[in-house]
Length: 289
Image (cartoon, rainbow, N blue to C red; front, side, top):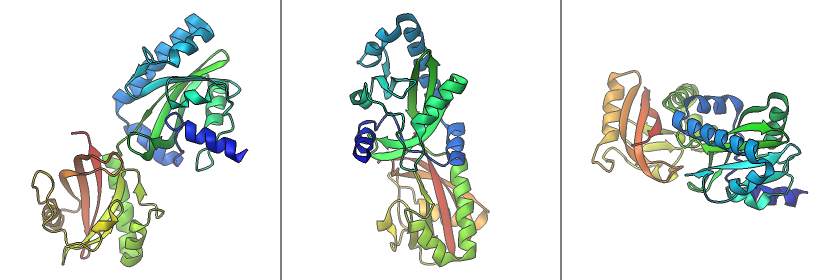
């Protein structure tokens, strides 16, 4: 049974991502780009209309390149018993297989959640995490679904960027930790399992006196390096700006270009930084340029 579940999990990469804590995921959904959600819902609406018109014959259209593929959006369909009926994505290999008991890495039975929600409410949204092959990393994903008779039709989209509110929230958590025990906090920030590395969010800490990096959740190679003269691709001395503004403001905001650890692309970033003694503590959010 374990090997079967492993095969299913490997095959369903794009369709079914890993679960995030409920509160965190709910926050992500609230700040997700409205256009992404609207596009997924629009495609779902078209797929539902086609299924109502053509019945099971619509499965062929859902499972091939054409009108039900839009960028990285595609349609998939499940029977109410958990059997995959159609898919326009990599989970096409799972058609005719029952995945009703599939769980994510946190043990959340996310397929069962969809099946139960369809039975009780007829439609809904499932939130979880899974590997996005474009980025090579697990990121949050949202799937909208609707029951049509004995079939559940679904369309999902990834949420590639964390929000500014999430970055500020992580900053205040980090500041609290630094005020309690700085050395322990720094070790926690550098620990992938410490709770301060979440998707494209992470904490960095710089010693203001010698301008050395003490913590960096995304790029450990930065630890111990003197970064005062670091420039972004546009030549901006953003560390110097952080140090200067944080001396004048409670929480300073500095924008610059930096590598997003999820997308592996250089993107615009706004970092929120605060002085805690001789330490500069920061968390940033990436935005689309």
